[in-house]
Image (cartoon, rainbow, N blue to C red):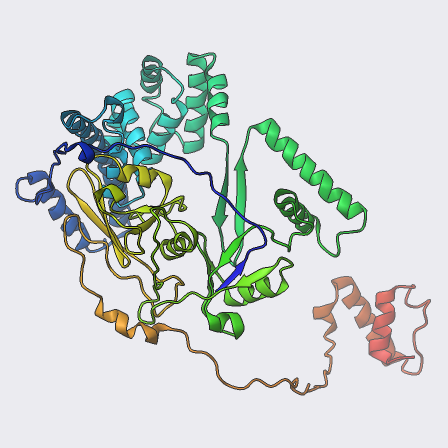
Length: 551
């Protein structure tokens, strides 16, 4: 496995004192999940309708198919409205149960959004955002909620109404909601956003300033992996700061170009390299001084293997690109070996004697989990912690360690949450008694190592090993083993005989002139037209060559 480690990276360490209810013998009253189909006619009806849609044949005419598309789109909006209402109801129930469990008032219902996200099969962060939006729609925007439930507007329009009225007081938000009642359905998304923003500014003269101040607190930098081994770094900044940063970057790139130091690079390439050099502090964009961990199989590193390398937390890098990156990088490169199991590609673990996951063990857990281990959460790993707490007898071992984002790790410590981990997977149990399972993937993704189907239905046991995994090696691409020749194939020259069809190759006026020249040749075959006869036209001179041959 290859690593480029010329520098060091240290994360801040926080000493957090947490007192759990279990330490004081408090009994946590959890609503253990039952089979919801036993006493819910609504769920039975929803399941039956889902079966109906899955078995529905496509329409026979254009009008019928379009009518179904419209009806299904309205149904989508109605489903979203029902989900928002259920999410708000769940939050109220969770707050009441936390209160009965003597959870501090400030913490009651705090992790309700995480449970909503897992129930929706999305990340906990997405669940928290959905719950916040649902609360505003149901409570603060009644007309928007009614239009959504009737299928008159889409979820995108409802979200715009929430976003653009976020700075208003509850009474002002309802006034804007009433004013927009007739504009919701016929207005496009961009026009809707502009109109609601204008009404919000009218309702509160300081709304624009509040929005700007609130937006400034959300300034951030994001890294997004895109195609072909590339990535995008984007920064959301206050407009004056963004303009100042870009102008400084542009001026630096132009000075390099004017000085003749571009080295064949175009303007955008110089701008990108200057961006990297200024942010990283390096002398050139190719010398990467920060610590970069690159996991690559031996065949792909030392030979012409096909399996892509893997950047933990970010994704794949083509094998050839990884070899070129390691060979051409100006920074110092260290190569260390880590071992994986041959049957599923998972890392072979190690243990530690301390209470904290540090050093090599923490690094190995980060490699193994890649991103936050909570089901459907793809956030970067920030904490390596015990699935079973040390206070409950949990050991600092490979099997009991999990790489989690900060939010999911704090949620794990909330009353009623429980994590059960092994090296092969993790089970998360929420205060409502629902369980969600996720399997540990291979450290380097390849065709022969499919991810085990470990995400079970809530409350079910993890499924057995997939028998198809034993035959997955047949899915790998076949390498072309035929010898390649280094000699270039002989070039065959073929004579080209031009055909001069003058009326098809020349403009009409020159075609007419050619006909005159051909007629003149028939009548005066002994005489070749002179330059004066051709009226000094280069096209007519070429026609003379065609008709009479070269001089």
